Image (cartoon, rainbow, N blue to C red; front, side):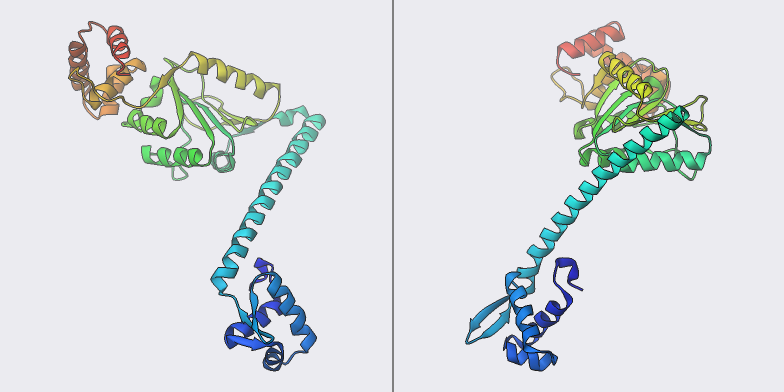
Length: 327
């Protein structure tokens, strides 16, 4: 039972005997277990080295409190296991890289996989999401892969998944566009993620959807409004080109940041959120979806915010809000 802590089965048996006796001599333990004296002597020596027994005088020994003695052993074994697993993971990555290189040398067509089965697409996306260790970069626009039951992910689904990446220390960078904001409430959810560490930016449009995982694989849907075909691109000049393209889009995009406190402009947090959506290029219809109101109501709210800022156009409102430190 305790072999996982580095305690051999004979030593564990002797230790348990000392636990039952409270204090005992080697001879008493020999009599209880019916084993030779030299066997117990060797076990006692190993148990003392592990800090599981100590001498109380007159050749008597007492078992150390199990929690005092064994919890440090458990912590050490956990650390050793984690180090061994990390080393094994690194070795797996090195072997996998050699495997990919070998496949490419034998047949360059292995550079790219095309997945057309929805089940396989879901499995591959989930596999890469769970195995990511360093980078998760995205050009975010429809189509979306959704869940195995066919429904699209909710805001809370996305928040939980991205929060998990951030907690694992993954560099999460996403570039969004107005088409990304079809789901009501998503913009506000992205601001929450920005507060947790996601680096998010916005562009007026994106030419295609892209995910780059750990800078070692890229996922690109082929075409169409649904996620029926997925291209998986492995390390190659093509992947390098996609990463450079991503950096170019990133440098052009405008940051999305958390809402600033309202100043003396009569603007509340909802107004600041609306200004951020204006800055991101969202039209009234998209703003209405995010706020959960009608397009007419969104248009009135935009006009009211512009009036408070003394701006005649959306551009002027954005410039004024930025100058006042509101966005």
